[in-house]
Image (cartoon, rainbow, N blue to C red; front, side, top):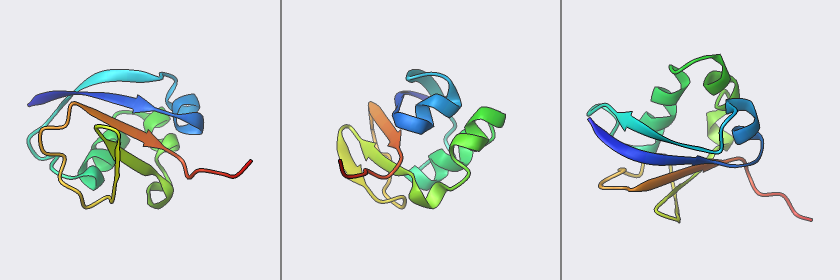
Length: 86
């Protein structure tokens, strides 16, 4: 297992109930898609926040990535909904 800081934004943060946290990731969590699937197993709040995983955006160490991107040695991973204009 390795520890990584997860940061949540907008309605993802609101549904999970925290803005950030340190999480120990199992070795099976290799990609951003794996991370989302893992987080959904952590309880109803996570499942509700990530139920439409195809719209969730991911940034690894402040760089936007696709869901099939390997996490590598990421120190920080951010999860957020699509950006809206304004």
